Image (cartoon, rainbow, N blue to C red; front, top):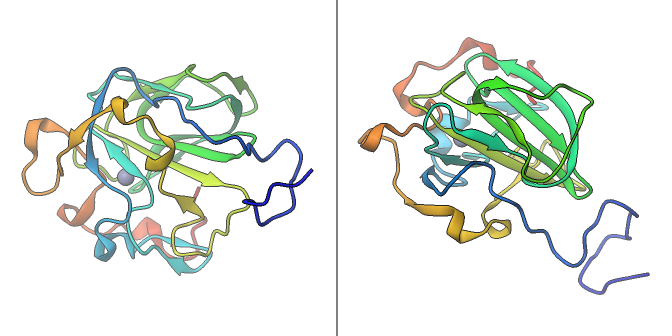
Length: 201
Ligand SMILES: [Zn+2]
């Protein structure tokens, strides 16, 4: 089987040639507080396999503390971890098509190795790690990905999301509008925990 629009040979079980449609990673509609690729000056402090980030490698949503964080597709929990000064409490899932990452959570209610279904709760959002207010950092990697591509192998999830899940874009930087947060950005000192030798999620 081959599809002319896919350059790589098909890897059974990994590609979803009919398209990738992510469920919302939270309850309700949420405001975007930071888009993909923003603030390159800040994110250059984070390294993946020795390569600094070229900008924000996900999307931030202004989810209030205690909002349910939900799996955007069926998958396996491959890591539940904590990264001080960065992602805080985070959950990483593996899907047929790649990985999804949910960061700055208050608590995770799933454990590494468990299977989750699309829409299932992974825990609650909050403000852990390098964060200036309650929000969810959401990122995806699509197979095959390269950690050293300047984005940590992540891809902008926006084209794969339903626009009705999102209210509007309102940058959380500078204004602190509505109490929504985003990643630490330039308002926090650079964290010593992100030296190049540290392996990031
Ligand atoms: Zn973020």
